[in-house]
Length: 287
Figure 1: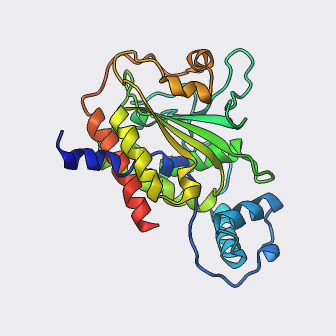
Figure 2: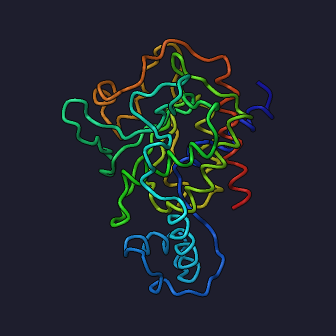
């Protein structure tokens, strides 16, 4: 692989940071003091203030915009709207359940990160079906967060991003996938700031992990400390990488897995991950 290809592969590290990062770095100054934003909770005011780096006017402006968005976008979604579902698969008239909370199948209880005690969300990007619109995914993602994160608290989540494909999954082409991720990120980062504790992307080539670790030196420290990559093979029936055990036990992962057993490796896997990495790099330049 040529040097420029390696650079592209590394300079940006993960599409899914933009599905569920929910960080906002806006420094615009508004005119409404934060404590005067009616209809908001103390937890919301705290989160938006942290996201705006302690700037009360900017936080008030962002929170006011969020409350207006919530009025125009009623949650939970009505029954006729598309939502994510645990057993929904690509290629049907339902949105694939590519995003979900990790739960114990025996008890139904949330599986929590061994590192920080937060609940775990697992995402399978190759499961996305682009026959649906960005608006469908935005609505379903907002509905998912509405049901799992209360505006009365400041709970955070750990996001595990599994880049491996699976049987029957659409494994969308990178260039077609990027606009969807950007659309989701625009809405989610604005309306759900300070909800991510850790994001773990796996399995990645060992050299990609090394370069990614260097790239994080140029990121905002608060963002960089949330992100990590784990190396390992993404081949036929490859196990979860060893480092995942710092967040969740392998036994729990195997029993909690609700998606079909992976049997094949997609030929488009390399370009798929390249696109994810490029997006992260572009976002760091913008921010």
